[in-house]
Image 1 (cartoon, helix red, strand yellow):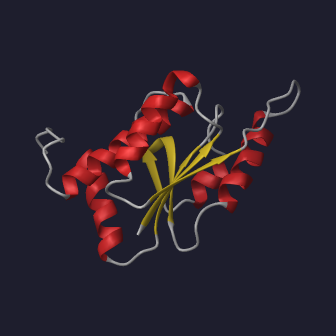
Image 2: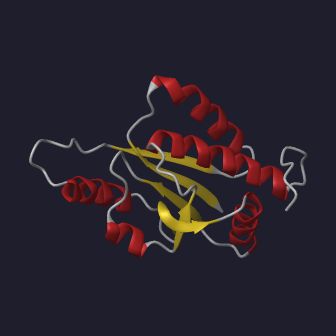
Length: 158
């Protein structure tokens, strides 16, 4: 079972180190692949839906065959850390190809990509910059691994 992070763009220096650290930690628990696709430039007069559609096409092409697509969107379902851990554990136990977590760019994900995803996950009801969403997701994947293995990192009372 492989975990894939499909993201738009590369992180800026401010968060790049923290993102790399948590992706490295998460990779201790899950075979992890990070795929960065090119960000579409929003030019004056270009509808933002066209920007999202171009990025969505790049993201869609990179979802691994057989993997469940999990779109990160504010309108998705909020999961606890424990629920994320159990979701990943179940995928592994049932021999699934894995999960592909899809993080949009600065303008979010195209509606058709969200609608076509197997799961829709909300990291927060707040609007998060896409780089911060990537960092938050990487930390949660690391946390999920510690939960599955019964390690002491996760301290919530769930």
